[in-house]
Image (cartoon, rainbow, N blue to C red; front, top):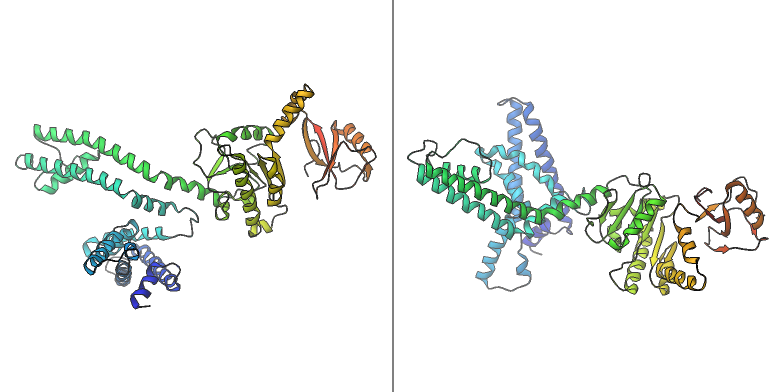
Length: 499
């Protein structure tokens, strides 16, 4: 490698060891520079301490100038990595490529910082605080400051057009007023005065330091005011289009850095899943246990504000931390209604597998008292076992349950109504709970059923092994119920404490 290659790697290749060294030095200089800026007001002007700080500040600025210059000079335009150009074309590409690189928002911040070397621009020293926007670690997934910079870069044509309109209006308005009133208005002596008036007027600021004195001047001012309204609307549209996603990414970082624990995460939520939230609201108190919706789309407008929305892809391990899944109590994976059932189930299975894989690598998951519980919705019965193998604790076959209920009620009228009422919260619903603490075990199923019904009014219909998940519905009365066995019972509310 040549010296130029080493310098390029040190300033532009994050994988190179030299790059980490250079970044460490730059950050040290940034913090030293900020420390000097903070300390300077405590020393009287002209004192010995003030002179020392000025010398240190100037040395730091020269080091910044060297760093910025080297970063620009060692930049390699990406087009040269793809195309072979003749010497003159290569030189032109390198020159204009470096100019475009120097005009990127982050580099402009660095350049403005160095301008404080000019005595007349020493007041720009405070702008060095903007170099803190270079940080990447504070915002792990979507640095909003870097997102703003990317928005400016990606939509630079829109911003160029908007600023061009502003510039043309300012020049035309300022030049027109200068030509009309330069001899009749003592406030307008130079072209700069006219341009300043035009800029203040078109942005609707209106300082009032310069006002038109002639009728034609006032007409020009009126046109500038009306033009300013359209210009502001143009900028509002451009900024709203460009910066919306960059600003909304702060919500994701806000949740990732929050203290949410024991919440419920719904993966793959879409508009067709709205009824899920309605029935959840009848089962749990959203004030005590928050529900986080995690999906690859933008937040639906119809979604109630009490639900936290995190945009991301739950099939990627790198994005699961956005929803703090390692700290949640339950994850519900719903099937998409936008695609075919097989494709929806494939996404569900991949999501479950990804969550289980991520949990094995997460330190917070290792310290949990109980593992995260995953409930998966499957649309095709053939994929039930696949979902269980991927790591689902429970699998709900929504289509099969619905169709089975339809077929069963054809032969036994009334079953559908009774079953529907049974699964609704507030009616005689099905619950799972442990044996009452005052009950001696082992005991027969008949004895357990009688005692539970006598003390709580619940109707015990089966037992469940919490370790294997195996259930027995309506077993024989002489079945021995062992300690630790869970009971399946019908009741209007969960009388037995949750396991």
